[in-house]
Length: 348
Image (cartoon, rainbow, N blue to C red; front, side, top):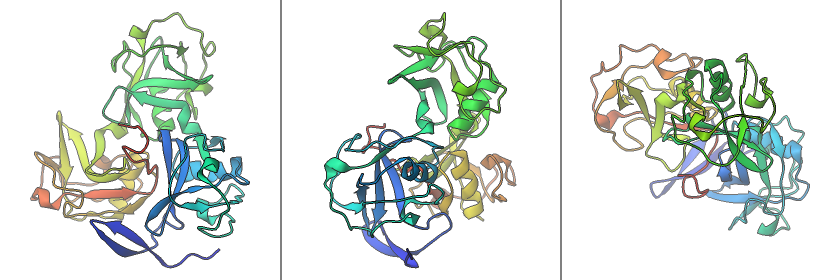
C-alpha cells in the first residue's frame, strides 16, 4: 500500500503539512492502558486517534506494534476491548502483518477507515517491556523494581542486588546504562508479592527473569529490602507536553534540572535523547522554546552529537553550564515511540 508524501499535524490550533520523516512512515501508534508497554492500540491518522479492530488480530500484528513503540517482543494480542473500549474512529480492520514490518500501517489491511466493527472489538497488545516497571520516582528511568507475574505486580529483594542486575533492568526499560542499584526500599516500600530474591545477572541478559534466581516467589525478605535502580535515562527528562516522549529537554546536574540551548540543535542530538529516554527514533528537534520556556539553569549549549552516543552529555559540548543563551532558545524533541498520553491511561 502506498503512502502519501505528507500528512497533516495539529498544533496550537492549526493543521500543518508535514513531510514523512525517517521513522515516521505510516501513522503513529500509541498504547492506552495500564503501562507504556500494554494497552489498547490506537493509530493517529487524518488529525485523529482511532482504534484497531480485532478481526484477524494476532501475535504477529502485536509484534509490529511492540517493536514500533520500543517495547520489545509481543507477549499477548488481547481482543474484545480487553483494555477498555475506545471512542470515535476505528482506523484499521483485518490487519495482516508478517511481523517484520516497521509500522502497523505497513501491514496488509483494506484501507484506513474501512471496517465493519464496533469498539467492543478494539484490539490491544501486551509487550515484553510490560513485565518490569519502575515505581516511586518522578522519572520513568528510576524507581523501585517491580515484576509482573501470575497476574500481579511484585517487588524484588535487594539480597545480592548490584549494578549488573540494575544494568539488565535499565536496558529492558530502554533507559540506557545503570547508574545506581539502591536497596533498602530507597524508592519506598512496595506491598503484596515479592517475586524475586538473590538475583544474579551477568549484565547481558535481555530481561531480569532470565538471570539466575531461586524461583519466582521464593524469598526470605520483607518490603524494607525492596530493590531499585537509577538508570542513565533518569538524568534527562522531557517537559511541557502531554506525551512522555516529547517535550522540552532538561538535564539533571549538580542537584538541579536545567535546559538545553537550541544552538546547533538537530535530529542527531534529538536521536540521542529519544534513545536515552527509551522513546525510539527522533521525529523532530524543535527549538525556540517550542514546548515552553524553562527556568533556572541552562546546562548545555552548542551540543554536537553523532547520534550514536548513549547519553546527551557524552556528545561534544563546551561544558556543563557554559552558554550564551536565554530560555527563549530552549531545545525540545519529538520522538517516535511510546506515545502514551498522561490523562488517557491513568499514568501520572
